Image 1: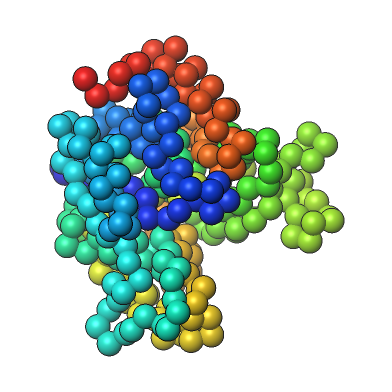
Image 2: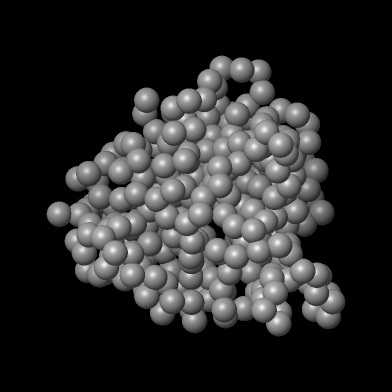
Length: 305
């Protein structure tokens, strides 16, 4: 079975300040995407699709695309605000991209097989790729309801010491499938306990082992046509009220499809530690974590010989 890794790399890191997707974190100037692709290939993925801004293509090719293309098929998809269904136009003065679900919509024609979606600047660990690859192997995608998968992380394994984080906290049923995701936008340790706040004053504790979504998904190719229908609804119903800033997010799309009973989402837990560069201050910790994995033998010093 062909399996594609789709990498969301069109967003600039606003909190981080710059194109953090190509910031080295490992030996020989390896970036986080290097490790993601290395893990994916080890787990049976044979194509990589980078979703990027067209103006960043040259730098992506130089830093990552050209070297990995010797080991796996590589394609580029451009996310732009003017990539809209027929009959729609970009609102005047709109600059902001349309969001992560729109990024997948832009893959129409480029992705025709089961695919995994990841953020370009998040380190997921090999377990996520292994879980989703095996899920693709055993899943019958021909049933009426769409079948999706989500790699889920224990909340305690996803925090930073440099500020609050936003996490989709998951409600999972007895079958190991997703019931709902509640977005908590401000989570951090307060007096040693993981807690969230909605008003900056009152903090509510969350369990260390509750599972959360880190935007790491498995989908059938057919979802791209379904996304178009939801995107048209979004453009008709939500954009007029907020034409410059409204965004069409992947987790919200999944939640809407779940509530309409159009899909099931298998929650695949991983014990790996997730890490990413949410804030510039996170980078030294990420570099240290990557080096520890290299030292343990999980990755070679030179990934692409």
